[in-house]
Length: 184
Ligand SMILES: *[C@@H]1O[C@H](CO)[C@@H](O)[C@H](O)[C@H]1NC(C)=O
Image (cartoon, rainbow, N blue to C red; front, side):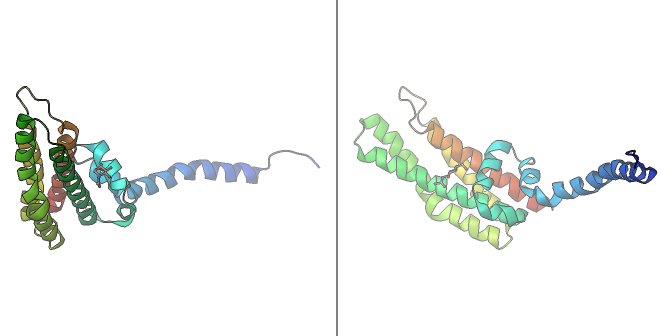
């Protein structure tokens, strides 16, 4: 028996070569829209890496739609703002020097309403589809973080820079995702 390539196998191989690119063409655009909704959404935000790592840290993101991703981002923001306030209150308890204590107290007063009212209300509005009101509250977190950080412009270095920057970035990302909903 001769061991050669039959015309049939050549035909099958050609078929395979021609079909693989066709299959790829038809699958990948679909994948981009649905399978990679997280990446697709994060590309439309101002902090791609922060958006991606934040959303990927929550397993619920995998099956969420854009509204769900906005809600997950807003929840992460609230957790971070709460964490930041706790950190500030911890620093105040360590009885720092008066000037530092004044700035920390000022920052706590900025963060308390965000944690207690503004963000929970925004998250509630988001779930009801009141996106404009939601964005108003979500963007307030970044505004307060900026105002807090600026309080340390004098001789005292801010112990809160990393915290304020993270709140700022998370707030921006959440606003950007809600803006996708507003345009959609
Ligand atoms: C704050 O945000 C970061 C970045 O997404 C996240 O890794 C971290 O878990 C958040 N903190 C809390 C308390 O959720």
